[in-house]
Image (cartoon, rainbow, N blue to C red; front, side, top):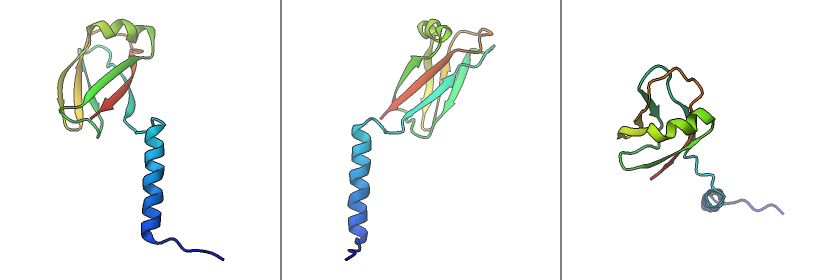
Length: 101
């Protein structure tokens, strides 16, 4: 015998799946960015960014780790932020970006 789920049953299953994903850290609030070479700023556009969001950077290369000592968020609003950083020709200053809130 087959039992048909009501729309409410499907919704509960969807909520449970979402909660389980969140428990495992799958909140889709992570992206990557590489600092723009030969400029002093880089813009990150990401739908989850708000003016009050916490933004964490994890360097993915040695040059990114060095750049981390001289990088800051110079502006932040809904959907985008600007990172100010050293102006040099390095093209491998890559970071994992985590956005919370």
